[in-house]
Image 1 (cartoon, rainbow, N blue to C red):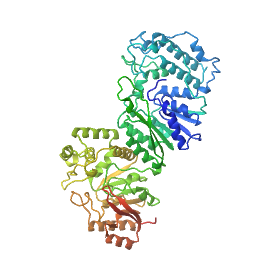
Image 2 (cartoon, helix red, strand yellow):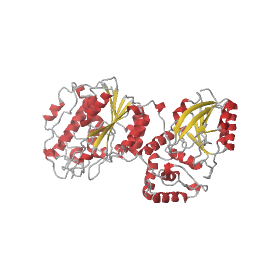
Image 3 (spheres, helix red, strand yellow):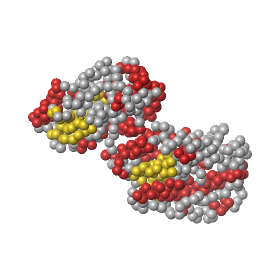
Image 4 (tube, rainbow, N blue to C red):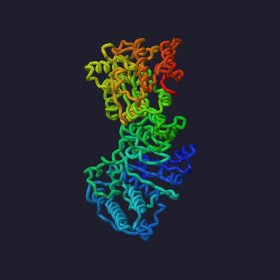
Length: 620
């Protein structure tokens, strides 16, 4: 049948990719999550005994299921070949198709009256056999698949059912023939079917290989194939007066919306039980190649990542331009264990610990129920910690509000807000005039009325995307050469989902104010400003406390108090930098017999290197 986005032409490429990975003819389950017309699932039933299919549209699941199980249809209960029966009788019925999709009783020209009354007869007879238990479920689905195939051959459309042609196409005038649906001859030993939005069931499906072929444009398949949905459901729905389309609200896919596709893709990768993921996607899609790569490498093993560019004949009509500019991507990755996935803050925070989170986790104490991120910053550490209770704290309330905003705001609405502000001020990299106008707009609000979403949008176009305020708490970072690119988008979406799925307590204040929160089950992590490396956020000139010898000594006393109470702590710090040594730090460590974990050179966001250490009061 004619199907928008049919992958019949690239199944051999998918096979080649899986073969290169050694995944063909293995005892693996293959999940076709957007099965469509079933071309991919039907192809791979030869290589995998366990096939799982899903689609948001009922007709797609029925059609694909009928295709895959055709070899199991003997019609022994019925006692005759129904295909030959349908083609050797002239019986008709004046049902829903005849009345609503032919000019017999309406103005719609999807089918000639003669073909429409035959379609109604086919449909009613199949239902009659099913209700009389004369056919099995497999046989029922197979006959409906054959009916869909037959209808496609005589529909007066341009290939989809969003609208009918105003003049009769030559093929629509041919008498309908009840066709056998095409299917590979190998038997599908086990078939599981689902009819849901994939994002709602992904965490319940046990599978080895997950194949994704989502919509990639704004075209809604529910609208384009409404007639087939009505034909299969046989539910006589209320329909629109012009096109005859049924209500497609339950069938609408968020994959056909900008940003929502990105959000859903992140969810699929995070929640699937599959070990391997393959994605077919077009270069015209809402998700960019860069975004897909960033997401797949976050959840997958980067050394297994593959992206193949494939020439692809796109569905076109007379309005299509530059038909040679379209091609398909095939992406592949082997997923990490869920416990190995790390998230990165969408804030490009000076002193970020994103590069050493694995070290922090691997050197954490064996048991604790509460985790305190005392100098939370961009929250790269706390977001990656597993504990019953996690407390975020930062002295800068603007930063606390920023981090919390990713939890409290719907991610899609947040992205639309960023887009509106970007368009309103014309924000783009190195556009100082637009940037300064947006910055002035933010600073014009009273401090307690400033929207953290607005601040984040401005930060994205500032110098190195830093967070910097003056003594009056006005944001004063100059314009930069960065922008809201797809890698930042991926960080924001994955971070926002992760922070929404766990409970966090957000606090603003001094780290020592957290003492009442600390008990025997607490692990305290501190990442203070470094005495030897002063940044723009801790130089004491920005309306917030800086960092000096006294504040450092106070922190040492605080940590000693934790040690006396047998509370495990970890301190991220720098002992040596550019030839200078923090002698007070070394003396404090030696006096108290704390342990040092050397991490080597860490590259900061400006490209500078610093020798970081972790200081702990427990055995590692």
